[in-house]
Image (cartoon, rainbow over all chains, first blue to last red; front, side, top):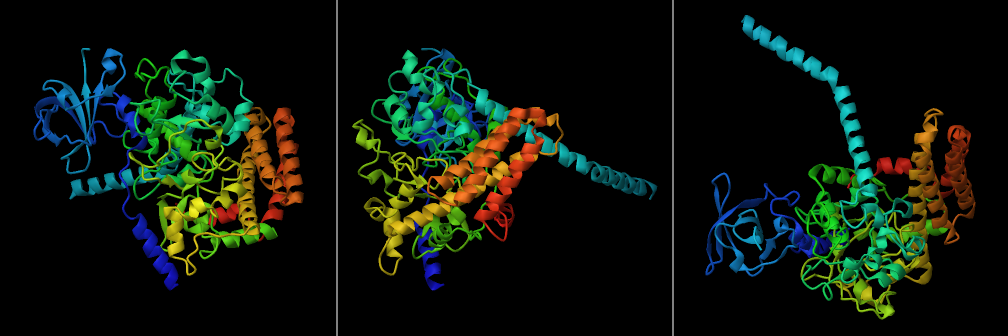
Length: 126
Length: 467
């Protein structure tokens, strides 16, 4: 009995901290802005880039409702260029692609909505 | 006063109407649920999403228990959409690895991104999707795919199809939605999720079962012994969920060292295969736990098809690769003698026999349900039920093979062979098949009675816990 309680305790502690998932979320790259299943519109912020501060990595978005949101882009943030309107494949982008006026979608890393897990930037011209 | 009285009467009337309608509402909801499953089934096997011709059923064929193995692949025609990389020029490089697919049933996945298709990929087995309703939940979120991270979007089973279309259905490596494929709609995702969750076992077993076979009974005892087999810790009730003594922990991931096996079939091929680092990017070496009830008829085993037989898969846990892995070392640290898992060859065979018998019992349960769904439903229904009867024959045939391959319960195996044959003929005879269905059911009951005593598996399932 004592041993099984010990076993339960140790194994539970061993597994208590789940690693961050990414994996085949890599396919996210190819989903056009606003169409991510279970995320877009509920757990992401969609709008036009209002401002981008390359020093702090802070990007400000204004949604169509007028609501403004801010996120910090870090080295761990995936930035993807959504070229689906151009009938081209989506590719990896960089902070330099976060240009004011462009439409973008931000997925936050947590509920506090401070850091961006990924940002999709919509391109309408090659 | 009068207004109050009227309002009360109105609420009472509404309540009565709701109560009267509730049976119809329940029936309508059930019908809507089964309709959703039927739509999901149609999509699963027929919808190509305007892609390269593959459907979900291409890699998860019902006739092969929703998985792929080299023997099944060898029976497919060269024009089968599984082989698109062999005949579609745009997919020739960087999409699949035809040799590893044909010889070992392995599928190429770009789990760590699509930036370097030549060097960043893994070769994965196709997990069956049976009993997903029991295996997909975990404290860290839904577990889909071998490393538990197989879905974009919110990572759910529902979103899984979107990732699969992008990875496997594309016409070109540009992967442009609207050009190379179309993305599933919300309604399609709902239906595909409902169908996937409807497949196979819906509940955990409640071990121990009153098994009759000596070897299977011994195997069950070893399986449940936390000092010997230690299997039940991570595969509680032979399912996919862990239970360390404080109730179900849901589906968990472990690094069991399968990647460190020196002589896996694919690694011996001489082909360059990048190391599969499992869950996450970079990976932590962990893979999630598959259910075992369905193991015996869904070989090969592990994320890279490293073991070809259920005996080989059980034997893996005696290996240096396992016992030196994080999971093996953890078990050793909790063992009074410092041993991870150390079974002799007879014990390995016994655990495998147990897994074969519970798989056969699950096949019998499925076959029984399919036969009973056709039996007594009127002669005209038989034409419509031909598909059910063919599926019943297949399930019962799987049960027979699970036993025969290891020489278990020869009498029961003979009855299962006969039951499968009768179900097949009932399907051929259509309107006149009912007497054969009854005979198939009788053979099935007799076979089951030889495997398990005191109770039926159905009862055991009813006693089982929800995941």
